Length: 300
Image (cartoon, rainbow, N blue to C red):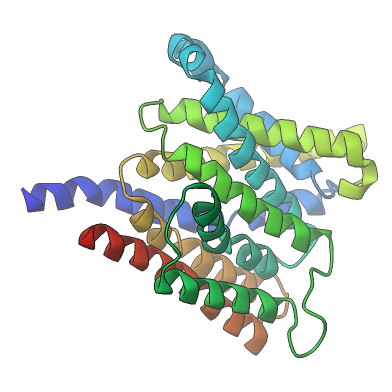
């Protein structure tokens, strides 16, 4: 029985690792759209709209199911979509490495939310994870060189993305009975709505409006980026309903490794001792947190 259980976990485990790889390289299509003249949040508009267009048939095929669970589906989509929107926009307002590392403070926010709202215990393991995570945050923000504080809009958006993802996953992990593609549709629809509201209220703060010629010129790349996003989301949502959150958390760290590594080699942005130390501390916080969850479950 153990071997069959292990084999049944193999495919979703490989899937979540693949999702991490795709998330780690997601900055490439976003930056490509930026080079075509789409600033700030505008690459996201093209990507999310394209993904919604591709996934729209799911709404009609699964209409009865979607209608029966539309409230939790919309709530999950709102928070995960907000995380997606903030993450993607952050990539054009700050360095790629800072976006990835600040987003990946999710274990810190997840721990705080669990203690405040889910009455989870504040264990020694969680205390150590918080110290590592917040220590990594301060290092990334420039501790010892300047006052450790977000230095631009991109930093703030990356932090907010991590917080929204921690909230969104609280709903995502409870929706295993909902079709994966329906959850993906709520994901990108939520991102599109949040981005649209941000652009409507914030205007040029979130990127100057592109000209019609720029939008048309970016459309082929945007549709390709939307096609890139679909397997990335499917491989994020589907395994999450079949694996424990602890295993998902560890396997998704492939995103940090691939994202930081690819940005260090290809983005031309600085990657020195400070970035390396911050990466180690933040990844360490994630490892400590998820291993602590597994230990607590095994002793419960």
